[in-house]
Amino acid sequence: MQGVKQAILVVSEALSKQNYEALDGIVSPKAVKVLKHRVNRLTPSQQELLSINLDFFGFFTRSLSLKRIKGTKDVIVEIAVHGMTMIGIPVERESYIYFCYVFQRKYKNGMGGPWIVKLVNHTSMLI
Picture (cartoon, rainbow, N blue to C red):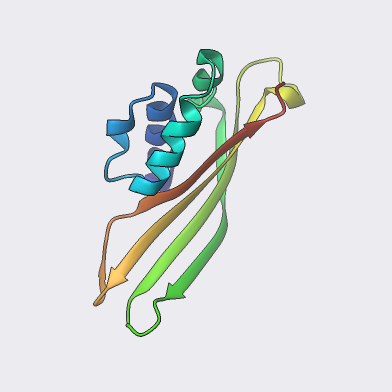
């Protein structure tokens, strides 16, 4: 799970700085396109909230699934991770940022490809 944690930190930091090139090979091209569209519409203060605070950061595996690709022996492994971070002290409900990342890895002919982020979602109670 250390790799998942590192990937979440890298992706969240890149998004907060609109550094989409840093997402190459980590996030699927389709997801990068959607993220660019959405992140570019955020205010600078909202973009700052995308960066996850390492000091106040926790996550857990929400689901793990295997999908067989019909007509082949290929398999896709998918892991959904949920977590939260805080944006400051004092800790109030409004200070929590919740997130979900979905990682996917395709196995073709028994060989695993890279782990790729397929979904990124950050939300908060902030208005």
